[in-house]
Length: 439
Image (cartoon, rainbow, N blue to C red; front, side, top):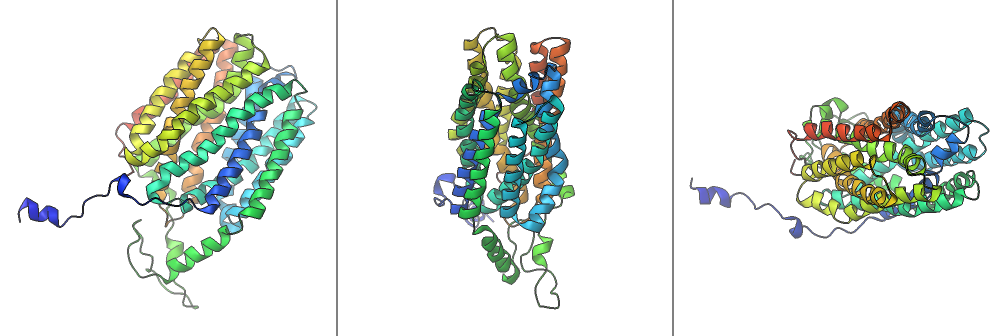
């Protein structure tokens, strides 16, 4: 057979520009709006929390532990969150988780000592992991495969818009008392719970329709390696194939790309959710001798850099591939975080913070897309999702504690350089991994 004959039998691969424009599902719009409101409240609290902890006359490392406590309980309860989603459904798990965080935030405002603040903040992590796992499951199931990167960018962008406005507002509100930001955050979360409860009623029905279609469909390969019509029938004549279409964590861990995304999730958690939230505000107030307004603006500037990257990184993840975006993000963020600890004035501090945020935005949507590629639209992957979240939370736990100890023992410079080392390790894990875009 000639080469021309062989190639004529193979349909040409579709370019991203040839793919039809997918209408954004209404449920995703609701999740995006909810994420924006959550981020505003979280951003209001972020620059105040370490300073509020230090107001109880504790060390920098002890103040950093308050930030880590939130991530620590997220890590512990991530497996439980996957179980709750399966038992209660995404919508109810989401709402319950939001209300738990709201109660935790309100309690923080009335903490009378360091240990009460640590306890109340840690309890909020339980609710946080509940609504995070529920939201990730919904996004993966609802997002069309050809638009996974763009929808991840949209969802992450809504968080970033809130993070841009939130820290600046939080720094200003701190002047009226450090308790006020926590109460504002709690009120914002109650509004989110009302939004999801009233505007996201169709999720359970959509899930039932999808399951019904899978049970009654023909026995054809669905593209994930499972046959939607395979399996045996029970006494009621209902096939059990849907239950079989679950991606075991053990199978995901056999994939180099999934192992690599766990390391980059850890690195991003260490840098963007750990060091940035715990150490950057303290660096502004202690090393630069700036006020709470500068501490809040530093987080907003980081978010601006991330937001700029999100305007194009999701689309590039869908066209160029996931791996190039993650590698570039790790390089940019890792180098910038290492330099940040050696900045000596507010101009360079803000500039390097923006560059570090840019790196985080480059890899964020691609990481979410990798997890979605591994699981697929037709499979359930609660444990796979929870493990990815746990990798980020683990970085957010260890990062602030290790950095705080380095600050107390040496200075801020070595503490920020640790983020560079963690990013480099993840970079090395990603080099041999295959891109999941075409898998």
